[in-house]
Image (cartoon, rainbow, N blue to C red; front, side, top):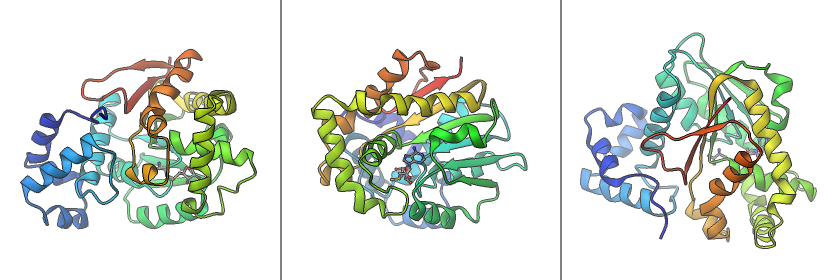
Length: 282
Ligand SMILES: C[S@@+](CC[C@H](N)C(=O)[O-])C[C@H]1O[C@@H](n2cnc3c(N)ncnc32)[C@H](O)[C@@H]1O
């Protein structure tokens, strides 16, 4: 049985709240309104208790609500310099930053390699009323672009898996930048499964992976946080991802991070440690 992503009863109360839809755009509200409250609760139960389906109609609401809570847990600033690592085309975090920290000093930066996904990211975020910077380079090099202690929050939204899989296939010469991500996904899944089952994942990627975490800590201001969210996509299982690895990406990488003495993990009420990690710069 999968460890639920969240407390169902508390999440239902949030879903029923009058201001629940404040996190949604007008288009997202129209989709939300196509369903009754009972249907939304059923979708929420599926979302929290099973691997995530792309088309679950409460998925965007849940992610935006949870990211709003995660950011508020680590900062009470009114403007924010936030760095997202490997956003792909995902606009949940920039949308949330634009809603909560709409201020002239707010800057959202993403560092992302794949060109097709970056183009889609630009299309999705071009109307947002905050400054958006895109660094089209490897996260390993962020210190070349951002100085020490400049960032208020670093976030990884479902990207530890992508970073690890890309590191593995890049070593085999696969181009993860100019290709369609879905075309190379089967090779990434096959490679990461093999490394996981052969118990070579750690020796293959840990040091490069930790280099990224340590660069993130470097650009973070003192006492600020890296926030990591991992969850399971049903699609990843459909294309053959090892279910045990998919469910345990965060516990596995957490051990690498804590063994290396990087940052200090802080636990916040309401965030399951299987799916969330808050790492404070010491
Ligand atoms: C499938 S996408 C989306 C990930 C996204 N955060 C999500 O919500 O699923 C994965 C992205 O991670 C990027 N990526 C992987 N490793 C990276 C690295 N070391 N530096 C920068 N971007 C990286 C890829 O280029 C790609 O655009």
